[in-house]
Length: 509
Image (tube, rainbow, N blue to C red; front, side, top):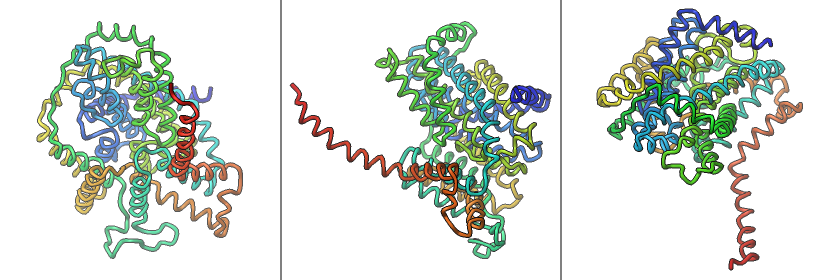
């Protein structure tokens, strides 16, 4: 019941005229970002983060989180109408959303996508409301070894559960650790890797890095691909929405299953993209109409959209309770918290109740506002895609440059941003993931501090990482995830000969 009282206090914080206005602005900007291919939740939040420097932390996080919700909603519009995923997690939505649009059911597909997104986010927010304080209370018992073990678990989770080559993930993470080490050593006060350049004493600001890596990198890639938009138009009227809402309860099992998958993938660093693909695959396998998936099934839109929103929302739980982001966007928001002078983690629930519960209340209201806005403004946002990309791209680059310059009012930051943009472009061309680099850049120094504090306490004895059941189990799980790619390959190698033997024993008639 304490949670409900705190939540109502959060609603009182959000419903002030200023915060309500910022929430609406955030949703509209987020939908715009989600609609534009090449941007995305993490990119949009990173680019617009400097705008919040003059706001109170509560107002700033409400606006930025609503940009995130808006981007989650907006990604479905281009997926369904243009077969262009505005966001990576919207790729699975194109499988059945675009065929529905081609069959003249664009309005129905959009209504199903938006409503499913809302349902997924709502279930995840309810989970955060009641679970986050419990996780935070539990985390209050943490010391330096436990915190380092949790950081280690986060890094290793990206290796064990991330998609793609584990070596590329490790390489990306190693670059992030190297960048995080630049500047002043917080323990000894010595300068590291500054090469005599005074401006590098403050290290690489994560904001400069994410604006370049995500924003400029994506723009360079989009310019190379020369996007040409062509798609279907859609009219969403109340009759179509009501008819779709009457049909959606039929897929309640799919919704609940997809929300569960999304929440799990959000709390672990799996993220919204694998959650959407996993939910689509499960729905296709378990549905009675699974064979028709890919031809324009409503259920094929419901599953990925529910999972993506549930994952995107629940990714904020480990960020708030433990100070560990569950997604690239959460990593950017975590950096924002540090800039505003807030320390994410268990004490945040004690010292900054207005902030935490204002954010959680804004998740409820932001998703309701987002649903209403996207249902009423689809034609407007779809029309934006008719604007030539040659006009949109320079505007975005200028916004990125202004955002980078305002961090320290230094031109060096603009050049660094462009340098990071080239790195981001090269990473994408070579299929190296960016999220591990950003994660290591944001958390690298914190993990280092925790590890060195733990070593000081234990006088250099690594056995402190197994000194009690809690830290030992977290460290053990982390090492298991780190070695999981090797173990899974070894297990697959052991199982393969058995299948051959089985085939020999059971000859086919």
